[in-house]
Length: 276
Image (cartoon, rainbow, N blue to C red; front, top):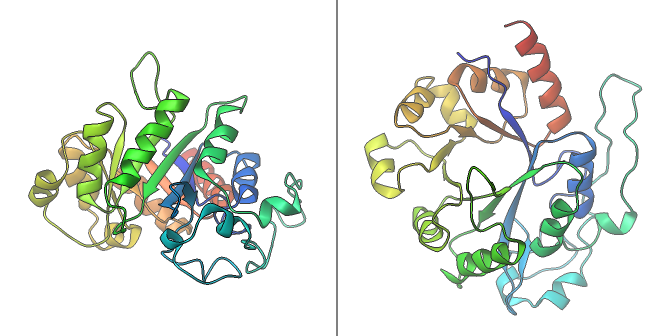
């Protein structure tokens, strides 16, 4: 068990209350005090990295089709917010969260470039975990495009003197290895959703890469976190939305908690750590 406070990462922004991956979701998360943001990226047919989780646009827009076959202009013509019944994340009953976003921020496609620009312009440090989605028809081009974009921002190198706010994540071990070759010092995270021996994980991703299991996997195997940390790897956990799962993360020594509910998760952490 640890009394160290894990970093709270807003999964796809404050996606419990705003349409995921929209600028509104990220502005809401920042307004709620999230320490870091998470986004998924896919490559459009004309080579732009956009913040979309699914292979298709069907679930989170009013259109249909495969993201990788559509150009940026086509994707920007869709409504990315009306599918989500909006609510407001708040603290105590009756509290209201200030409305910090415009309606257009809830409906427009968000490019990764735009999201990084928002982070660069903040008056406080905020980190971002960028997940590259695979498989994709573009293969290694996704990571190459990401590395070039990070270079534009000066965020492709990570040193103690000048840390990058970015870390890259993927369920693809090949993508993680590819990013290590492209950006040797950038923090990396290998996402896992099924049980596998640590020796297998060690053989798939380089030393120093953090490991991020599903919280349900961690709950079923309480010693998993200990085994990951024993290898000198950070433990990141997704997606943590209940007090019970926050406790699992604390007991496992997690460094990072990825959540759809950043405000609730931060309050839960506050109450649990006060009692330690």
